[in-house]
Amino acid sequence: MNISDKIYIAGSNGMVGSAVVRKLQAEGFTNIITKSSKELNLTNQMEVANFFEKEKPDYVFIAAAKVGGILANNTFRAQFLYENLMIQNNVIHQSYLNNVEKLMFFGSSCIYPKLAPQPLKEEYLLTSVLEETNEPYAIAKIAGIKMCEAYRSQYNCNFISVMPTNLYGYNDNYHPENSHVLPALIRRIHEAKTQNLPDVTIWGTGNPLREFLFVDDLADAAFMLMQNYNDKQFLNIGSGTDISIKDLAIKIKNILKYEGSIKFDTSKPDGTPRKLMDVSKINAIGWKSKIDLEQGISIAYNDFLKKDTL
Image 1 (spheres, one colour):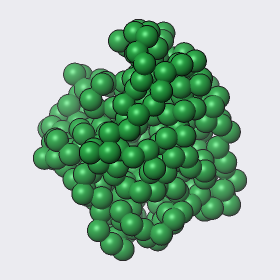
Image 2 (cartoon, helix red, strand yellow):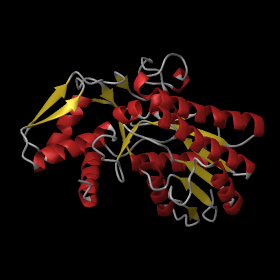
Image 3 (spheres, one colour):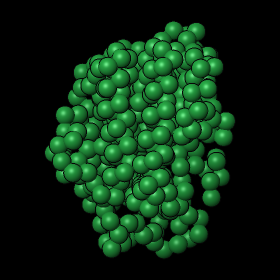
């Protein structure tokens, strides 16, 4: 990418898209196209076609997606499948039709089988059944990977895919029902602290292991790959370390200085027992995460407070 290239970030208002915008701006890029969902409905084929015909971007990042935690994924199964398929189908196809030089598709670690060996290697894709609670979302993301591979094969498009681990950080979603585990814990523990509640109840046993990556680290990796990586193989992006939900809750409790106790509702689902990405491929290319979990949670909490999310 050159400084003058026109770059379109689909989903620029979201956590991932806004991080990519920040990274590009920090690197001196100014010809950046951003559109809110009100300005451009990416599930609408005609709107997307008209947009690409008019703007003719040189590079495209697909960070737009319908996302949520276990409850949202399991409740809105049809919406998660339909909307994600439509978004990526429209953007990928129009990128091909309008001769986009390079495209990056952001997937998710949930593409891997529920009981795949750990850590999760890229080659484990489609080797077994998916986690039931987020199967529709995972299927959409797998379709996006395969679509990039197919357009590369048939049309020689330089479309690449990356699979981030669980993300958190600036511009995260702290909705009480539709957020992911780390921001959900920040909100619940913050509320308990401000309301002087004696305890906080968390879904599940607290035993599942999860890996977390600060979103600006993801943007850093994405920028590097957009500059230097042109292979068919999708790449995992993560920190390479994981933590139990219980230990994560305790860490957040300590950072927020909440003095109550943590309880677990074992009648609620845990989801996948463990999700740790094998990041050896991207490490070998020369990238590693820089922001550790404690530092990242502190930054995220300060961002949460500034937004007055409650």
